Length: 497
RNA sequence: GAGCCCGUAGCUCAGUCGGUAGAGCACGUGACUUUUAAUCAUGGGGUCGCGGGUUCGAGUCCCGCCGGGCUCACCA
Image (cartoon, rainbow, N blue to C red; front, side):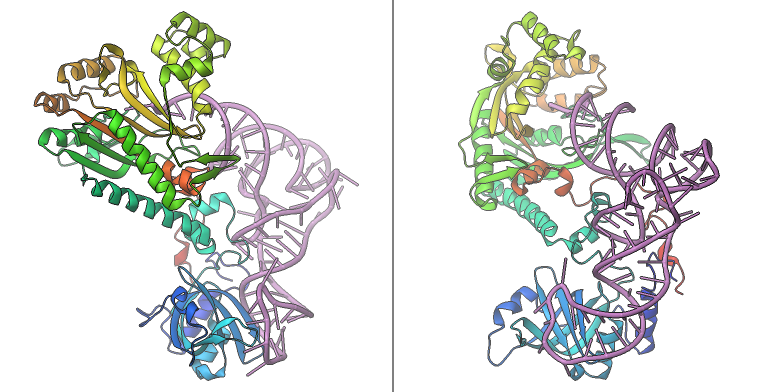
């Protein structure tokens, strides 16, 4: 018996030794001239039959007597049947009949034509062992379906589910598409620090870390915002960054502690131009990646064809909470009716915010721009002229999820300093603990008026792929380590039997 | 952090009223020269998540813990 996690008599290490005994390298370095399966499939009717070289994972085998054997071979984008007879040579035949197991990576050369039953088939003339699998692959019909195993050992999930691979191909193309669209509009892609001395640009608890040589505590960034806006001061007029941000908060179907954000800053325009750009980006991506411009999330169908609804924050609270959003006493009564006890003693803007989250957000199923947020919850936004309590800001919602956040950027250094100081004074654990004077100093050198935008890439991919869990758009979502689990212990070092 | 639900072979899953463990796939051996969820015969494989309790007897009932899922909280 093996201690490698294999069961019963599935001792792959014994097959490995047999391969070595007949002089076959179980892990050779290359398979020259390999053709993708998807590329050969259209050639099945060619006369004379083409000679092909294909390689991939053994997904099924069907033995027919002592001489004949069929394999199903799977590579990244295709699947094809391979037939092995005695004409592969004595050693090739011995390898195929006795030493190839499900999950092994094998290369075949042969002529490509239809079998007697019409199945496109590589009639093998050469067998090359390419990589021995020392563990059994997932069950061939269902694959790994246990959710815990799927995320913990994503390679098994990807191996057995082409549709999961397709989801991540989609993600890559969405990000690439965003890059191309923004670059075509004159935006410059930049990279700013992930290690921040002060965690700013959003309200969230940061991860902390430490630099030894400088003996300095640092934070993993919660947003790139304050660095990107320094670039506007420096003279760049259109910049964007696509990258990871880190927030030390709970895990849920819509939250992962590290996630990917796209932020852009655009000089000389305000939040209205940014809203038009956001709509254009979403409509374009929906056109490219959704069959009819709509997506299905659970029971809901969401139409991304645009144009999207635009409504003000206060109007929506009035509409859905059925209360005058300018009457604080009425809102407190309404919040109490709804059982929102935690805001009883909170300031007025918190009551309004609670009503928005409770009554409005769940109704924002179809794409909606929510505009004109309270200044009190928008410390980096420029106020609406003549209305100091409101800012030129929007958030973009669908399916009740926040997908984007944007505003006319506050570039008044005096106002910005006052707002930072007010934030620090709240002692809120999610607010910065100290004022970012360096950023204020940058604003003192004059930042042009500008609009900024942040899009949550993971949630965008959820929408475009119809996923209800953010973990289906993140290859390796954060997990608690599992003690004693296969892979957690160095059991690969266990001796062969 | 709270509530509800889940954890049985490598994988996918059964397991009745509490009576000492089952199937399919995978794996070993054998048969079969056109199969394709191949088929047929046969064999091996289990710390029933972990620990405690109740009981003559626990996969099953109770308690605690670990891990996971969902909901809530948190999350501009």
